[in-house]
Image 1 (tube, rainbow, N blue to C red):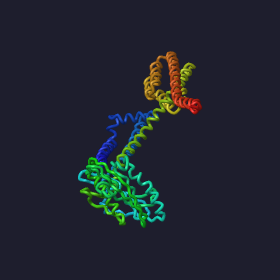
Image 2 (image 1 turned 45 degrees about the vertical axis):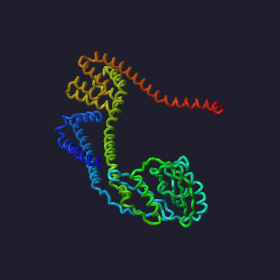
Image 3 (image 1 turned 45 degrees about the horizontal axis):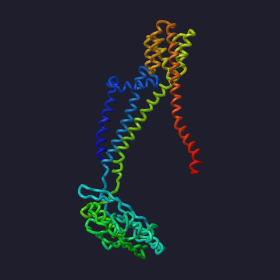
Image 4 (image 1 turned 30 degrees about the vertical axis):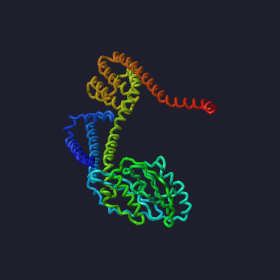
Length: 449
């Protein structure tokens, strides 16, 4: 509940700053790192410039802000609804007992003693069952009850833990009620109380098996060993509440008392309000994760772009060198060579060439083209072109031939790294195969030992 309240305060604050950013976008677009970063990403993915890049950036931010504000509004309304949901009225304390032959009903009971409280599960059993095979079932049940009753103890003559008094036999056809001749030591629920014992106490346990019409008795002997009192107020209240429930099984309704042993009692039920309160932080977390995952898609596209550009660099610079050596112009060679990658490289090169043909400075355009492509190899290549192009094609051709050699060496190194990674991925299957082969070889020797 506290987490929901805190989020209800924080969400409007976040929404306020988002709305302010949206309304005063022109004031922030040049003074914050967010807008230039988004603009640079869109420029690389869509190859946009000038006004088209500004419009695309503004539309992208507007879409993202709309999604964020809608999500914040929905989460705030949901959280407010959680706080306004009624806590639930107090139950009447009347639990309808199951009809004869039906399974017991489990309810959650909250025990509260001042500031200390606990929740326990209480089984409300059904009314008397009818079963024609009573005699056979009773004889079979008595044969296994002694072991089950003392299951948690060393022996029946050394009882230190609570006994197990099942309400039904293993088949579920018979009801079993319990009684002892020392209820202050062993209660009807099997609870062992040793706090007041000063010496071992012999107790006779009597079990009554019934099918609703006939009864059959069985007796067991137990010796309870004294021990220090460890029973708390809540444990004692639970014991008395359980005994009260068992004592009233001849009634169709079990009525929860308001108080037992000074401990307040009421039935605890999970309400829709409590469920949503528990799930609300998780819903906020999932919404944030989904939004971040959507944002990460553009990063994956950028990585794919870099991989594609780096993969064609050697072919691009080699073709460029061959065309220049054959007498082709620099601009024509660039456009022809860029077809090795038509998604990202070709539009960037064509745009740069068009800028030069419309009167822009050739060295500046080439340097800017390298920065737009972003990879170190392209930055180095176009920096070389921007420096050497004004001096003549012969000097540029010599520099490009050296660039081809460097690119070839880098391509071979990249291929070697990829081969190593592939071999590492195959290492685990090979080890598993070797283990299987060794086991097959050693199996006959192991079986023959």
